[in-house]
Image (cartoon, rainbow, N blue to C red; front, top):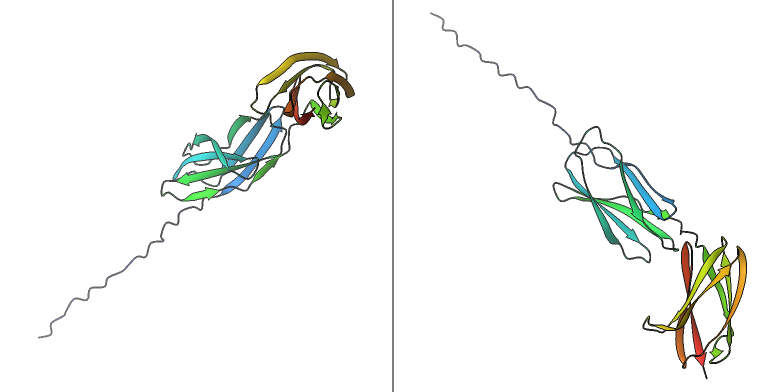
Length: 204
């Protein structure tokens, strides 16, 4: 009598592994409009992103100035953040994101041109100036404006009397008698939109 041994066939189904989408910046920009810089960015995916840290650098040191929470939505949406910036120097921006696993991803550096100052002190003469004599100030104005003039010492304390003069668009020259002790001082000039500072020396 023949006995049949049942044959059991086991079929293994190999399912494809879910590969997480790579997180990267699809687009990013930093644009100046007047005294504000608007930063915009968009990600390839927002899954596992906790937040975005916005950083800026003027002289090489990165400083975090804002944190934007991730929306965690797919498809990803564009983000936008405006930062007030009145500096007349070139400034760099970047975005640093941290995902839920603690991984850090940093965007490319975005460079924004300096704000064009309404006033620029071109020169102070003579240099140094003798106390009791006139100091000639040569300055440029983008637009016709009232100009405030103030002198401070090395500690930032105002010395003497502040003045307000009227300046025309273009090159201007103004002279003022300097009655100060020997030392270094700072001449401040402020127009309607912007200001400039220049250091000078007084001798006896």
